[in-house]
Image (tube, rainbow, N blue to C red; front, side):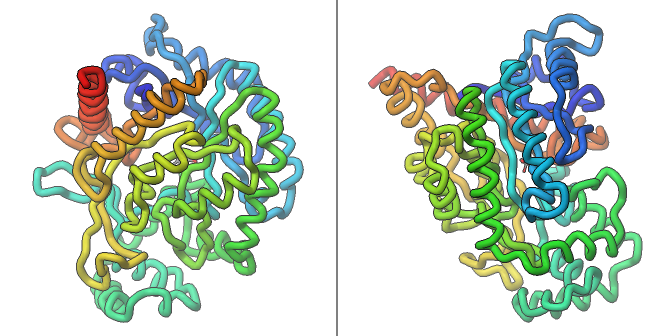
Length: 410
Ligand code: DNO
């Protein structure tokens, strides 16, 4: 696998110089300032490429923009409403521009309204470090008592709703406001603070959209964009739902191996691929990550390696779909990372190399990281600290190198 690093552009407090010193070889980024649905012009893409290729002082960084994360799919395209046909044409034109700029891997997601969702962005660990966490009681408190979604109550275990009610009435306003900010961090337009009414409006757009309809909209989208990707030699890769279960009554359709298998076979092209995010998928105990890598591996174009630990307790039985979890260290947690990297090796060194594929090395980024040491208080993008992420990357690369050496020795 090829080590890459997510960089949020010149405003990122982690600089290209830091990235270079982290051990990563390439950059994953996006034109975050372009609103969803609009065209990515060649000019803007080229500007970002130049920013990636330089240090803040203008000296060459030796880095290249290797993966787009994400070229966002607009809410209009997901719902097939409003200006969605224009958005689709813009999407295709953006793909052509990216290809012209020499970038060939493009990640996107098809999560309605919410992208990733956590209730706490700075959960304190026993070590004094912090990480991101999803707490089911806090989420139920938000859904049932703050958003007041009519059918919310029935969607959580009774004891979770009862505890959420007690918490709600004893939680100060300031903490409730922070919960709203944390949960809506992954929402479109989340750079501005969203109100509860904004959330209700966003949810109302999906009132009548079933999971089946959303899936068929995804297939329609792929039938349009995959031929463009094929023609221009691009590899599209869909990111899974995070967390991998429906939230706020919204359908989620990329949460399991079966979800991926359905989409990959509906538009059966190598250009229609997977972003294997072990942290998102690893929340569910029925997602066997090494097995998924073995079975879907030939279509995996991008790897997000991170780990999560399910926090079982109140209403959170081991197999429960909805449950609390936190982002653990990269090698510790639900996912057997050594087994997953072994499966990645099988795909790269056996299957791809033997087939003579040009994309033998799959781009991988250490996904997220705990805030540790000088990360604390450094106000980097939530989940994307400098040191915690670098620790994760070092651990992942050490496993990778060890497995390579072992394979050579046998
Ligand atoms: C969270 C990220 C996601 C991801 C998008 C891809 O940290 O992994 O926001 O970038 O879902 O489209």
